[in-house]
Image (cartoon, rainbow, N blue to C red; front, side, top):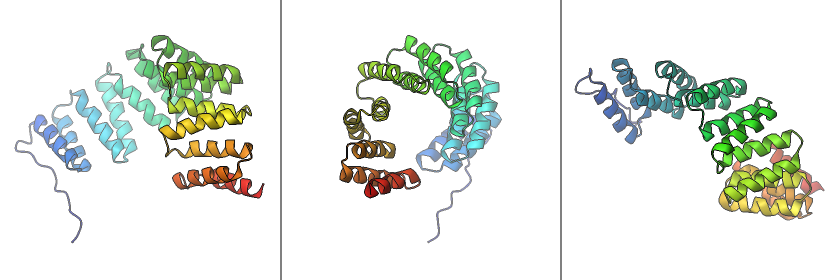
Amino acid sequence: MGEKVSRKPRVANPSDPVLWCKEAAERMNSGDEKGAIFCYQESVKLRPGVADVWYNLACLFEKTGELKESLATHIAAGKLFPQDHRFPAERARLLAGSGKYTEAVTAVSDALMISPYSPTLLANKAGYLIFAKNPTDARQTAEQALAIDPGCSLAYLHKAHAESILGDAAKAKETLMAGLSAVPDDPRLLKMQANLQIRSKEYEAGLASIEKVLLLTPDDAESWSLKGAACAYLNQKESAVSAFEQAMKLDPKERSYRQNRDAVRKG
């Protein structure tokens, strides 16, 4: 039998945008994302003034891998709904995902003009600033997020990252400790803590931190690589080889894991 071909969506009254939205929801429930996109497109043609329909359409484009279409939809919707922070915020995320960090900073700044007290937007901006090679502003922006929400783990993460780049490892560790005090057992904070500890030659502490991470996120290849590094420095060769091999299984495309395993075997 051949593959089941999805029929072009139809509704009882093609001039009714609500019916198209209902059909889109049914198509999504049945796994027909392309059909749902068609339905949402028909709906916005008939009634372009509903922000949530545009947002759903953009998200579906991203889900189906049509990133250019998703970005274009967020841009178009942002012009139609200039007071809805979601569209510039999502635009920023997509731009960052394609490595356009400077443009992402501009886009998230637009979102913050609409929602200036959002700790999430501020934390995201800090992250984009780091990759745009502006750690000083990243640290300041993360601090703004933490002033609004002392429990924003992403802000602690980006502040510590910025401090590390700026050469203040001690301050970065202090920030991570504050973050883990506010948000205990956050795997992202623990992983950065382990990274800094290993780089500071605190290998046993780094191994203890990364073991906690692996209990929380056992499928993270980078965490297994960090465990491999800590074990290698502690001369625990078998454990190091095993950790690097687990990282290789989880992310076969990353060459450094194999290189590090081979280096431990030869050492």
